[in-house]
Image (tube, rainbow, N blue to C red):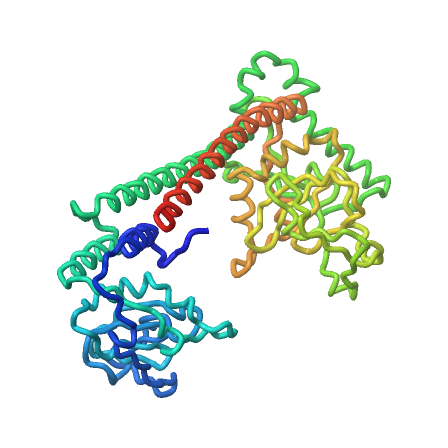
Length: 474
């Protein structure tokens, strides 16, 4: 890693390029050149809002006070805290707390602005102690020296550094090397912006593919070539009737519970037109089970090192199950919550919090259960192509369904009833398969593009590291 003096790559390079190559007539010890003192204590209770800025260990605190303890412009140094050692400008008529050091007076052979930049380059934070609350003192920075050059040269350097600090262009025939290095940073930033645009466009492309898939646009030619596979006994209407009939039989055989009838889909609810042969249905129409798990704490169940794999919303990604962090609960959790024990082929979607809408298929061999933030959707394979439903729920259309049906905007929640009521475009089983294959082929191309973009991103980072390394070490 290269050294950083600021949050500005251009300024870091300028500091390294200029100050490492400076030809000084003399090196002046910091405490000879500068009279450094500490600010004054100011507690929150003593702070009386007024017209004067208050400076602390990180610079301007954003607070004001009715009094000031310095009446001149100077430089502050963070003395305590996370930004210990940072260097900042202090305006005249301000209050400086004892969390900062300040320059009370200085050798007039130095320019104040030149000193600010050189002290920033000197990385005073490296002299802090190793305590939980870092602190530097006058004694700790006693070995720092300041390069003495002509005041004219100091002013030129300070003016260049000011321009770079403000991301402004500068001209100088004496610093052509610095200009060429800054131009490399400009090139890197333009390259990085282009990469970010490419990433955004790729995300939009993926969503366009899913949207066209669920509207039947990807398979227009397929339907023309296979009209017999989308009509008659193969039609979506016939499929939906068969599913409903089979569900009624399961209820009659007491193999599943009778549920509250779902409302018909009105014209006003239909978000887009479907191709001939497709039909709208509710998710609950094609599902045997829509449920969720619960919290082990609610059930008096403990987390353990081995037992039932416990799947939470952090494990359900977009089209992937993520098990980098595995949690396990006691086996009796499955006795308490048998309905949410996972089976291969179950569809899981997050229904609580920021991860609402991430949906994936469970196809693992673990004995597993879920918590209350994950919804389980289960139906037989011959009802509906599960990957097609995943595509629906992961599309912008599906995400909007979920976002629009949240009942707690403070921390988004979806009820099982809302999930059951989701409007789903239903094509024939044959066309579902064709759509999934088409989407998979297109997504493979997107994956190839994504790899190219990632490689470009890696190359751009390597370019930046090389530029900074050369600037700091060359």
